[in-house]
Every structure is written in structure tokens, then in C-alpha cells.
Length: 334
Image (spheres, rainbow, N blue to C red):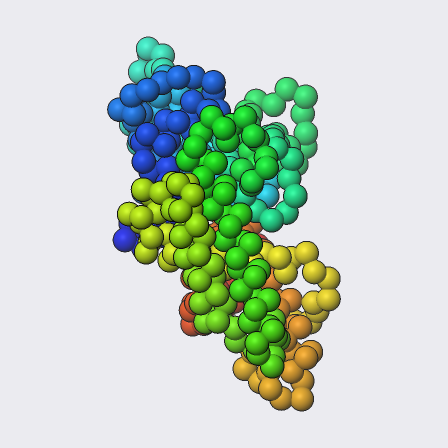
């Protein structure tokens, strides 16, 4: 399913590293190299071939290597399969299918895969994901393998890489500040209002306002401390909008770690959110959250995190997703 470019929303991470100099600095930091000409990079990022409506990938060639960098706020053992899809689509664009039938061997750039993780679940500095770990029947010598190196880029992790790449360090500092100030904003809201934010039936607008306030505060502080100063001055408006979408998705994923959610979609979602103020409010909301979480897990496992972000602000689209999810359950394909 190809998606028109105008519908894409960048992540803040991708927006920063769309700058070739920053991207080259990141490559050097990871590989211990010292390339100094950004034009040595050939960008190969795909404009389609994905269900995501929020672009989180960067692909480029340098030194005969095809590098795929992906930013994630969740741990995901399925990333080798996604990268296999991406690699195939990229090579297909680079080398027409008919050329693979010639007698001479074709050379292709050596693929390398990295995932940059900045979620809230604890993760070691470096984690390796292998395609072979997904095989239904493990074998000692797989005919195909794809290895993804996941790097934790939260503040305090991978210090050597951070010190070698100011843009990555700056991004890490910015994310840490946003989380800190958003927690403070929620606490202040709860202290000054009769009903805590988490108990509101529809808290989307307030949550987005608080997140945007936290992002603006983080940007102000980064500019003052000379952390990606020029980037934030030039791109403040876009960063605030992108960051709000990203943070909304990240916050929802916290629900996956909580235990007390039950019941089915029809009663849970409809009663919980449409008739939430009736006598069955408590049971309905719990059921609604349970089934919304199941839907979002299904979307995430199918590489459709971008649809989650849209659903958070579009009830009609959320209803469409629930219909699709229920159809997949009936068909036994979920």
C-alpha cells in the first residue's frame, strides 16, 4: 500500500537527521569513521512501500554500504522482517528485475541496519535482533539472515556515541526535557482542577495542549543552552506538531503494561466511550481501554504505528480501524 508523500508526518528524529551533515556525523559516530563531506552520502529513503503515515526511517549509501536507520519509541523484535521488506523494495528501485537474469554477477551495496530506540521501557545500550529468531523452526545455519542493531539513545545511554555526535546527544537531551516538563504539567493540572487528567472521559485536547506546552518549554531551554539551537529556532512550529503526535503514541503504549482490562469490543468500546456517563461507566471504560489497547497492539505488530497516531485525533478513523480489526479476527488473520 503506497501512501502519498503529502500524507507523511516526519518524526523529530528523522527531521533532524534529514540534514546530511548531522546524518554523516551519526554515521561516523557509530562506525568510528571520519568522513567530512556530506555529499558523500546518497539518500535512498523510500517514499512509499509502508503502512506508516509517520515516517521514521532514513536510508542512504556511503562507502559502498546501504544503511537503513529507523527510529522507534517501542522495542520491536519484528524489525528484521520490516527491514527485509525495506531492503527488497530499495534494491528493486536500484536494480531492475530484468537485470538479475544476466550472466555477470551484479554487485550491490552492503546492507547495514540500525534502530535508534528512545522509548520509556528499559533497554540495554545495545540489543541485537535477528531475522532467524523469527523462524518457526530454528536452524543452525539459516539460508537467510538479517541483523538489526538497536541502540538506546535515551539520555545516559551509549555515551561514547553521544559524545561523538552532537545532534544525537541534542536529540536525547530534548526528549528527556519534554518528558520531564510534561510530567510537571500534568501534576500542575491535577493540583489546580477538581478532576485529575487521567479520569477525564475525553482528555485528548488537554493532553495535546500540555504536551505542546512541554515541547515549547524544552525548545526554549535547548535554545538557551545551545542544544541544537539553530535547528530549533528554524523548525520550532514543525517540531511542536511532530512531537505532540509522537508523544501521544508513546503515552498510549504505557497502557500495555497495565493489567486490569477486560471484555469485548462491542460492549467495551461503545458503552465505555458513547455511554460512559451511564451507570456502566467504570466497566465500560475499562473494557473500552482494553479493546483499544488490543487494536493498537495489532496495528503496531503489523507496522502501522502511524495509524495509531491518526486515530488518537480522529474518532471516525478509529471506528474504521476497529471494523478492520474485528474483520481480521473473524477471518483468523489478526
